Image (cartoon, rainbow over the protein chains, first blue to last red):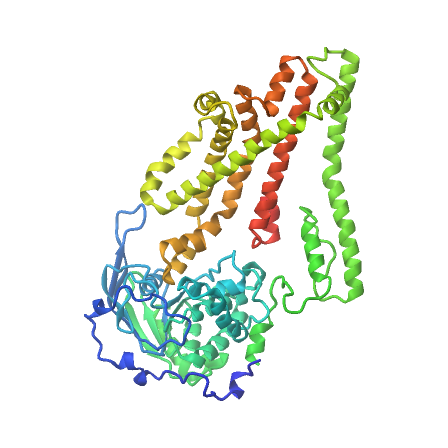
Amino acid sequence: MRPGRAADPPPQARRPPAVAPVAPESAAPDAPDAPESAAPDAPVTAPVAAPVAADVDVRGLHHTFRPHGSREPVIALDGVDLHVPAGGFVSVVGPSGCGKSTLLRVLAGLLVPTGGTATVGGEDVRGRPGHVAYLPQRDLLLPWRRALANAVLGAELAGVPREEAQRRARPLFERFGLAGFERAWPWELSGGMRQRLALLRTFLLGAPVLVLDEPFAALDAITRRAMYAWLGEVWMDDRRTVLFVTHDVDEALTLADRVVVLSGRPGRVVTEVDVPMPRPRPATVVTEADVVERKRTLLEALGG
Amino acid sequence: MTRAETRGETPRAPRATSAPVPGAPLVAAQDRLAGSEPVAPPVVRGTVAGGTVVRARRSAGRHRARALLARWVPPLLLLAASIGAWELWVIVRRPPAYVLPSPGRIAAAAVDAAPGLPAHTATTLVEAVVGTAAGALAGVAVAVLIASVPLARRTVEPLLVASQTVPMIVLAPLLVLWFGLGLTPKIVVVALIGFFPVAVSTAGGLAGADPDLVDLVRSMGARPGQVLRVVRLPAAIPAFFAGLKIATAYAVAGAVVGEYVAGDRGLGIFITRSSNSFRVDRVFVAVIVIAALSALLYGLVGVAARRATPWLPPTTKERSR
């Protein structure tokens, strides 16, 4: 039912974009060494309601691990600093094995790093899942749940009654281009639809920060470009903080405000490039002279 | 327009939930029923007008009948030929009836024994079903324990795998000694037979759940119990049924062997008595009943497995059948 975005001035009903300077939490004086003050038993997953924008701050992140059957420890991350302002869209690019997935797993609370800090909205997230909405590389739909039941997974785990969770999820099926497929099994959906459903589920988590690990890597080029346009729109609607990992420089330039380049193993930040192009951005944005210039910088930083 | 474009791609097989075309889901269901035949009937799903759908449905019905014939006629012919050869052999060589009765004589014995057989069959069936259910429950419980408690995995799992080598049937005399002459020792034999395949298979299924799915729900803040309920248990359902099928295949035989040792009713008792009075024709009748019971239970487990996994795409189902 919703008309296209261009013809749709933001109505009052929609939350105003959380402009970074106004967001109270991110503007608060940062207290990097007071993360323990956070109540450890606070509900880990906020209900689906509108999230308050939060920033992501990673300082001196260092992680070493020993692969199975190997004596030599591997340094995955070697002192990574990264900041995503509240409501910002930052893309991380880097070669395979640069520790991008390690970085995201730390933010998702699945991995305790061997050194450094990682905070979301000022709260320590090391080993504490639930602060960010994490979308892993694969779409990872539960094959035994229909689309709607997959979408409400996060709410269900947080204890939201099923009826209530589904009532909130239904309108999003329209917005994510999945209307009419609420009762489909995952295998009945195309690759693009599966990915959108995974994104829908991630959005429904209600976390203020989305952490997306190469969400479009498995899609064909045409579907992928359609997804860029669509993700750009959806993001402009509610301006959550996004950290978006990709291999693809064009993808990063099309989507992000800022692109951070990680080096190959061990992962370090090599360079950062701002992308202040206006939105919505057409697919052709990557052919604009300013952007091509940035692309050259990025490719050189990647050693291309 | 961009939004419409993103939506433009077609899904693989729409269920027609929002705008059902009359008849279309039925056709889809039929061609799934059509069995393991890889050739799909010439059906254009969903989008067709009424007349075409009817024609397509009729042709799907014909196709299904042909598939059934192709599947069942050859083995039935072989069976009939074997019975004929047997009958012929008995007519020509005239072996004593207490060594090899003719098929005709076995059929007569079946009619003769018909009044008494149901009671024996019912007893054996109860032992097999209750025993398998108990064994499967215990198997799932142990599998969940192994999957949830690392210490249990390290201590119990090796023993579990090793103990599979013990043929449970040989324990029957011991169990009769412990549990008396009633139904209990037979149920215990069947439960022991069923426990191990279910436990081992289910434990494998629980442990083999996609680690990325586990990480995903953990990242959503799921507690270990929720990970088990939302990811591991559903992921283990196919493995559980694979174990249950093995358990079921041996359940009736286990009950019968338990009855051989001691008891007063059941197909094992019927066989012992018939054999003691040289009624080999009756023994054959019991053997046929046992085979039929096993096949029936096995088939029921297969149906239950398909009911319990509606999410599996039809092709996967065909393969796992």
